[in-house]
Length: 145
Image (tube, rainbow, N blue to C red; front, side, top):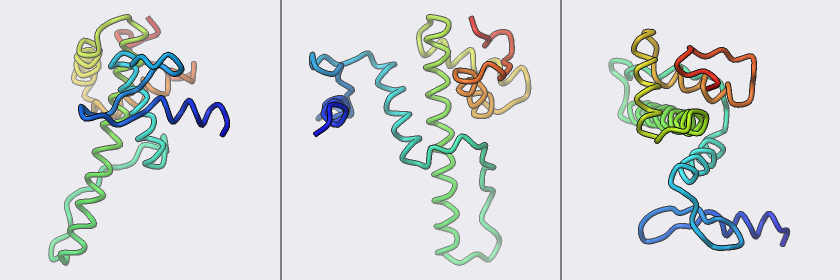
């Protein structure tokens, strides 16, 4: 087994209290913020990892069969999960960038989105992209810090 396989197997584990992220060889858990970021990355990867902005599915068409309505509901739930993962990642980026608690990072993200008439998930996508692309321009209150 390769070293990375061993580390990966030891890092993320399910406990009776939920998922925990261990600090590797020493066995200590890492802080909740890092855990959230790691788990969000794993969920994003599992969900396809696409960074494209997907359009939210609207309502099921009138007269749709039960199967069609259920498929539509699944698409809505998958979209909501993806949006949630991106928002959690953005909270992690902002918390680290501005050395603030995650709750404050979320409030700043939400306030900025409201003041600009944007969806939180769309602005969160920009924040996540800004962590790897210097060409992504953010509003001043979310900037590089």
